Amino acid sequence: MSIILDKVNYVYSEETAYRIQALKDVSLTIEDGQFIGIIGHTGSGKSTLIQHLNGLMKATSGTIYFHGQDIYDEDFDLRELRNRVGLVFQYPEHQLFETTIFDDVCFGPKNQGLTKDEAGLRAFEALRNVGMPEELYYQSPFDLSGGQKRRVAIAGVLAMKPEVLILDEPTAGLDPAGRDEILDLVARMHKERGITVILVSHSMEDVAKYVERIIVMNQGSVMLDGNPKEVFRHYLELEAVGLAAPQVTYLMHELKSKGLMVDTDATTVAEARASLLEALTGIDAGKADFHR
Amino acid sequence: MLRDITLGQYYPANSVIHKLDPRVKLFSTMIYIISLFCFKGIAALLTATVFLIAVIRTSKVPFRFMVKGLKAIVILMIITAAFNLFLTPGEPLVSFWIFTITAEGLKNAILMAIRLTYLILGTSIMTLTTTPNQLTDGLEKSLMPLSKIGVPVHAIAMMMSIALRFIPILIEETDKIMKAQMARGADFVSGNLLQRVKNMIPLLVPLFVSAFRRADDLAMAMEARCYNGGEGRTKMKPLHYERRDRLAYLIVLGYFAIVLVCRTFLPFPM
Image (cartoon, rainbow over all chains, first blue to last red; front, side, top):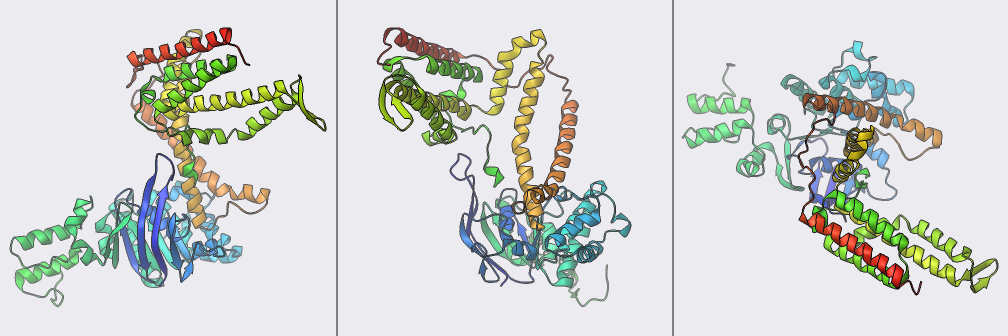
């Protein structure tokens, strides 16, 4: 029971002509150690939602509990919350400012009150974790490529050792190789450290492969919430709001409608392959002793 | 947080006032301000009031948006009224300690408060119904004659509209950077002055980097579209006076004439 949201509403520019309700009665429970994907297209409220989770935005109405404590309580320490719920924003350019990569990663731990040596140790560990080559540690972060900047930004938050790691569109603007690297890195963090990970994305393909739970946002409310298989069963509803299920889902539904007995719940290519092999040859691919 | 600050406070609505040529609104506002400072007598005051109310009603902007502008000048108004109240020589009405209130002082104070209120209301109608870009366009066209004597009117107008366009972008950027740094434990609100200035570095460096990058990108995009100054450049929405604009000028001039007539022939009781 890590984070609980109870009927959270958020309204932008209230009492002006530009009033927008970004969140409508959002109630969620985020369990410890889950790997969650939040999906929705632009303007669906997903970025607004995650900024509530570490108290950067204050809900217009509703309550958020972190480990049972109301984060809007007057004596609740929001800085402590931000130490424990790490948020990596979409654009690394928004947070890189130091002269060297290493110093930049030290910024978070130093703000936590750690000594220079402790912060340095944390920075080393975080940079190693995100796979930055050591010869780059003392270069300017502004000279890096987009993918590497993002790694540094993630390291900057990882160095604070958060219990919950939230990533806002960590793969936007990256090429397929860079995308896989970042997502694999995040999946590894989740597995090795057992931290809760929340991944915000508008790509179903990205998310389906990694997460155990998907929250679909549409126009400020939670539209669907469940494991990938459950969520993708609603692929027609997803389409209606401008989102798409992974291509595998479509293929499997198409094949089934043509009379092939395949499992339409397959969400990744590997699962689809197994199900197809089984349907075509009668062999249970899970037990079969060949690869391709 | 920072998002709530809006410049120019344009209020979108579908009204005749919104559709008027920005030049009409600029000149009419000027005429209205002049009329406010030369009226005399209760009849002229009534004319100005009726005219103002009529324009506010046609603009379809809720009155509370206009009042917002008034809040900012409450202190100025109190000070002006106080000076007028206590420092105008004339027949004493009340007198206590070193203060003397005269009949003339009272009259001046009330009149000044009314004038300032009307001035703010009148100009806020212009800013509420015209987007900053329309205003710049209107200014550019009105000032065009000055380019004959070497004033770079087009360049000034272009700089103004780019600056205006970039204010909300940079505010949003500042907001995002602040949040990104706050997520890493940065603190922008506590500490002594020196500490706070130092705390701004994580905000200012990314902001400047991004502002320069954006400026470069914009210059490149403008050049890619063959921008080379105002010479021979046409507008997507050229400003044309239409029937309603001419009518608006007539109404404003008519109003001004009435005020002048009232001033000459019915100058009392003020």
